[in-house]
Length: 392
Image 1 (cartoon, one colour):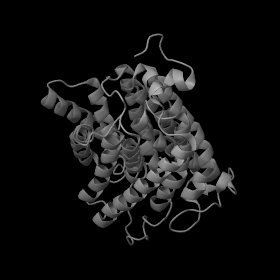
Image 2: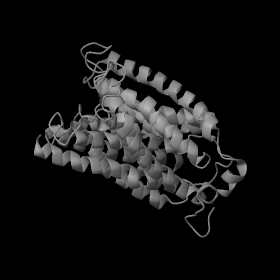
Image 3: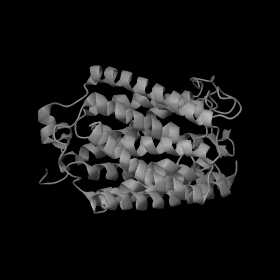
């Protein structure tokens, strides 16, 4: 065990959890109507709790167990055989478990943005748990756990490069969000603006800070690689924030604060897979392009395809993660075949598993709330509480 590495990953673990609680909860909560803000908080918080238990029970073993090319098996369920002295590289294995657990929390939490304001709470919990175990955890094994898409797998000596989750986190969450949005259908009223842009800005700022642990921590060491990952993460976020705002100003005559911080998230998602492989100039390019690319993707999904991916999960996270994964090959840090092949394989797998789970979970606990509940708001109807005395 290396003490410096251990200390840094302890901090990084806290930072990544901070991204979901309270960062993502505030970011998403500010974007919905006032009558639904508590439901978003509830969904994010409950997902964090449920994924923690599911990761302990089965998820970690499926992802990082000693199984074959497709899944890790059940040898480490409930951390069987793992003690305080067990090591993963230079880290205590229980710390590696905890760090990866925070990724297993935020990935299904990202999907929340696709179905806010109209989905049943039972569906959120059941779907998120099964999806993390049956979709996310196997993909983790394929790429980070020595499985079929890693070095020595189906693409030969050079497997897919995904430093911190462009494929594993952002492509899977983005495509799952798109599938759910299509199957769920649009909200009955899509006209209301974000009820609290202040929450959105605060949440985005928390996500930006937490992302230093997300990407910097993925080096799994306190060294120059972690420092570079942290630096390029910041540069990409800054560049994408400004390019999004500039593009918005050119198109609409005004740059919005919600647009600015959405650009931040686009830049962070896009640099995530490449953050361990590129330098500051490449990060500047990735972020600058991502701010425009993801904004155009928002328009495509909302306006042309008329899909109500309510908080633009696919356009920002899915498109950003896929773009950043491709840019690894563009900058000569990965094999084109492996990068594109992994995107296709994981994409097909995610779409199929998500569609099946939506049907299954919907049949068991219900999917969409009824019209009366949607109109009156999920806060009072499902949870018996409301955030404000006067809501809209």
